[in-house]
Structures are given as structure tokens and as C-alpha cells.
Length: 321
Image (cartoon, rainbow, N blue to C red; front, side, top):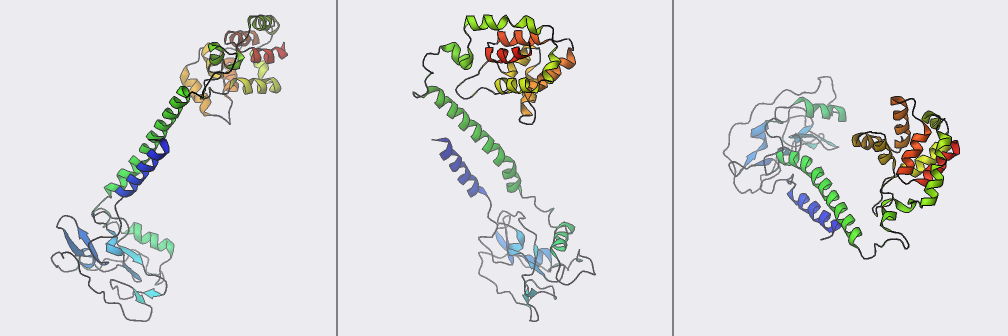
């Protein structure tokens, strides 16, 4: 199964496991009790709406698992009012609507409805609350939120990102494995195995010897002067900062390997590369070495570049000789 088809299958599975908000058993003004397997009245459980111009949400905001998905009360739709604290809103100026009981599977035992709780909104607010006051109604009346904590939603919030990360990681590993074993993934003509290790920069003995001959000219100059030569520094950044690609090119001789030559741990290199593109790892390395060892010279940097086989970078560095 391909990575894309696997991702699609998992997404469909997670979508099917999300609990439905509307009840499949009870009418609008009832909720399903999963413990007693019967439909209970929203009015008997929560009492009448605490504020004018509010009505019960569908199924009191509960799903069939007993979890709260919305507030039990919601603001009346435009053009409708509820000054008498009825279960449902009605057209403004008209009489309150009497809910029509719907046939349900089984009704729970009737019991007296609790009294209306005080409205959490300020007394001086208008009869139709604004959106900010509606939020206040939701946050100021926490008595119903403590009954259930929606475990399904909490589980999905944690599990879904983790599953996606694992799928993306698995797809990447499969793609890299396929690239490595694909018959179309050939080496470049005329290149040996060491060419793949050092990229296309594997030097010949003659060019490396000629580059080493230029190192004495850099011995008298401190490494810190490289920070002032922005053109040369930029050329070195372009050559040394890139990480290895999927094909393994430039697998050796990057800033990460240069940092190891200077004795810096791998954790430092990982942190330095995490700051890209706003911060160059090579520039951070040079600043770190200069701060730790002010007497460090350009010749030492040239020696490390020669040992890594980076003749191209050594030739750029020789411009400072």
C-alpha cells in the first residue's frame, strides 16, 4: 500500500470514530442516557434557560455517548425571542412554541424539573445578548461542564497529530528505501564510490597538494578576519552549509563535519542547523571557535577543509592569503 493510500485510510478511519453530535435515538429536546438506555428530558436535567432569549441546544448539547459537545443553551435565532424562559424560542411578539413530543425508543422516568438558575449575564445588558455576552454565558455557567469531559475528543486531539507524524515518518523512510533500491537510481558515469561519499568534490592528489601549498599563506591571519570578509564568507556558506540530499551527495565535508573537527558535539550542530535560514551554521561555527580560541588561524580552517576533501572551499579561502 502506497503512503498516500495509507494516509487516506487512516484519515477515513479517524473520521468514522468521531462521535456524532446529534442524537440518533431522541428528539431535539431530549438526550440519550447511555447508562439507562433511555431518553431524558433536557428540562428535567438542566431546568429552563437561565437567561431570556435563549433556548435549549439540540439534545441539550449532548451526544449519544453522554459527552458535552456544545453548551446546553444557545441564543435564539434572528427574529425569535424567548422572554418567558421556554424550552424553545418563538417569533418575537408571538406566543412561545409548545414542543411536539416525538416518538423515541424509550423515555426515562419523569421527575420534577429543577428551578431556573440565575442568569450569568449582567442585569443591565439588553434582552438579546451580544456575541461577547454569549461567550460569557458559556464560561460563567460551568455547572454542566463538570459532568463529562468528552474523552473521545481529548483522545483524538492527542492521538491524531501523533498518528500523522508516524505516518509521514514511515512514508519518508519507504520513499528513501525505494529511491536507494530503484533501478533508475544510478551513479553518475565516471564516478567511483568515494565520489558518492564526498559528492562531486573528491579531489585528485594533484589539486589537493596544490591547495595545501597555499595554507602557509593563511597562517599569519586570524580566523576572525573571515567574519569581516563577507563575500568570501558567503561563498563558503553556499558550499558548506547544505545538508546531504536523498541520493547521498555531499555526505561528507559539510559544516556539520567541520564542527566535529573543531571538537564541537553533534548536539551543537543539530541546534545550529535548526536556526536556518535566518542563521548560517558556518557563521555560528566560526563565531564559536573565535570566542573559544581567539588565536585560531585561517590555516587551521584550511587544514580541516583539506582533510575533508573540500578543495573547492579551500580555493575560496585562499583568496584571503
